[in-house]
Image (cartoon, rainbow, N blue to C red):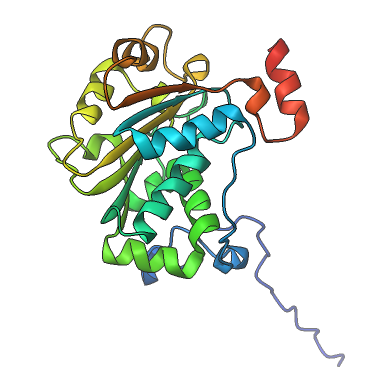
Length: 246
């Protein structure tokens, strides 16, 4: 009698993988498994134009800076670089970063995981910039000991941020009331920077409060409003060309 061939059942290979893998069980890691993020990037940041130089000067001279301009002008990166430099030099005791959890024209639905995992897609640009300036290992240590805090806008109410360098990113996606609340968090020996593009808000028309806040604060002592333009874009040259026609 011929032998019956055994059919070996193999588990189908799926090309769908969890976004955070095993981190949910072993402790959430904002940088994921990207080995390049472990390389420290310590090159001195240099301005690429007069407006960027004015922005860096404003960080040094003003307690509050509003950096306004189109995408790719280095607003967020320069602010975070200045924050890391202030922390390294001991001028502040911690860095506090925040940005609104607003979807860019699409609905992502209910994301899985705990609070940190739900907010990770919104806050990842801040982690990327911090990692470029500090290196992955040092950034993880700074987050663990509390010297760097990244939080959503909703978690800022009721706080007083003393001895801190505070960066509010994507401020064009905040309402006037939210920005007023954030501005009044500024404490002693602290610097606050708001970055955003009033022309690129993901809120409904008329809801963003960034332009109104900038107009009202412009001219106050210790407040700098720096306007960057298409000429300050440091991404691919095509970005500047597209923004002139879009």
